[in-house]
View 1: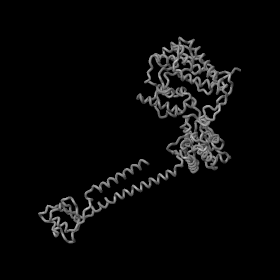
View 2: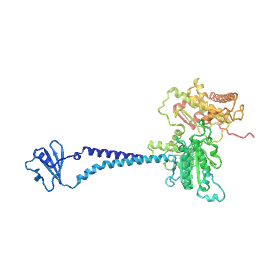
View 3: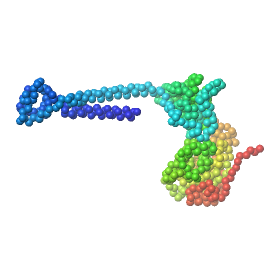
View 4: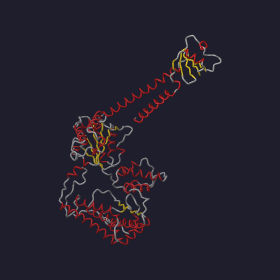
Length: 608
């Protein structure tokens, strides 16, 4: 709309300029001097006249000097009677039929500029008025209403998240049949909080609830409430809930509610900032819902830990629906949904892809299939093969291949020994995941990669598993040290990850027998600047020293384990590394064949 208005304004200005130029430059519109008819007669006899234009009783005379004069001949007298039509005269005499066309043309030429100016002024006044209305509507809600027919989403479009869908079925049923619940004295939750990692389908589930219930769906992001002007956010909250009540039964969906719903009293600038006022208004509106309004608020966040407790208490967002990362069965269902409009080759195995992608969210799986389709199209294929799917898994999980990053011979050898060191240690320890692929092809920021793939989804990690994982992380560092007598910077990321795991074992998981089953530093990682400034460590300097010592002991134990394994398998380390240098990539079967031993496997069993 603003573009159309700007175009209209431009046309008006151009028309005004053209009309003005026409008036200024048109010679027909030059003013002629009014003179008596006797003056014309004298000039005619003196041969000073170039032409005479006759329009009824009006005479327009052009002199040889270029000047123009006008006069009116007496009634009943012709040019001959006035002595202006002698045969030997060289004056051009032009008789014009007086139909009034030139008269009206001149009139229009004089009026048009004024009309254009008037239109321009009216347009500017309307623009100013619309800006005033925009300023008055600054506090109105910017929530978008989803078209129920055009963009209808149902639970059939949401794969996986079966438990979350079951929780939301009650919300749908209440919106469809509210009397069924109110007759029993039941109250449906006023607010439903969808909690889950990014990409797990929180927004999609909210749209599916609206589609199933077939009610108006008001969607807004938490950040759209907050502006630089104080009070605007609260005003928008009031307007949003007013619209929702007017269209009840309806659903209000607030995405990323942590933008306005963070815990109050944690800011440095006091408790009267715009964000807290907006949160206070949301709390008030949810408390003020009249009985029978049938308005349900659905909110989504991936940071429930930072939300204000008043927001989560019963009567507001009193139902929490957790959307987990999908398991292998749910991943298979999600892949089936996103593969509907894609042609697959006979060898494409989506079940195998589901098994190879633990930890992938719904958004990751959608991106995976999209990358496979792009790869197949770039090779001018008619269908998507399983090879395309495998490559897209690696691209999404590990990053794209860095074909432009060419390693010199020395770096290639170091990288090969490093990655094979990881693989051998992990292969020899019973509590690590099997090696899926070993490669010295650069991906993302890594020069090489050792990829582990669990045979099944895991939800718990044991102390022995952490110890074995630490040893496998240090396998590359130890392999470099054994093979070359020194280490490179390639181990920096491995050491960082190992240190984080060891510190978490001591301070977070209670896996240190010396420190004991106590959590230390529970408030670490707070996102609030005010808490960081006012934070006091919940353990002494002496305990911090003990924690550091215990972390070092755990890492050094893992280092000793890795060194013991690789020292015993020096020849195999050299053999596998040399073979890897030739082919650059090992699959799980190729690595096991080159190493010559099967993976050691152990399971946790009760001791009594």
